[in-house]
Length: 220
Image (cartoon, rainbow, N blue to C red; front, side, top):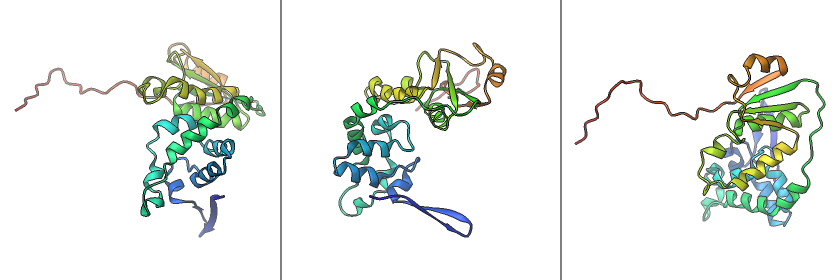
């Protein structure tokens, strides 16, 4: 099975990985999960896919798959369909991920507050609670997910697919408080007093417009 390796040269740690893994923003070990799929070890492949990515189902549908652009197989015929294989493994492991959901152990007294429940905010919440910190996420919208839930058409990202990843994160014990607007329903200073650390992961859902009172556009 392919594994990533690292070496130190001139005091700088150099990571060695396949070109496809290097192109992935989260460095998913693509060769490893493809190898596991070929062996029929779908649950292990799924675990490898979500090793550094708490949104495996979402990315199996809407990721722009830069890994495939760097796949060396294209020098022979065509790139390996890595995103489709990710989706295949996620679908085959659905029962497994449901029955293995567990709350994370809280080992630190400090708590963390996260403002925003989009991909960034929930990834922070996921990683922090797995490190033993209790996490509360504050979301102004009625449901979590940020632009994943309200900015992507349902034919591209169905609600049930997104919900699979959200359920995994919430099952760890992350407290998601939807419909709570920081600065309106609760103050930032209140969060500072309540939590040992605060992460601001807010989005910019409103379009920017030119500050002109009037504008005339001439067309030919």
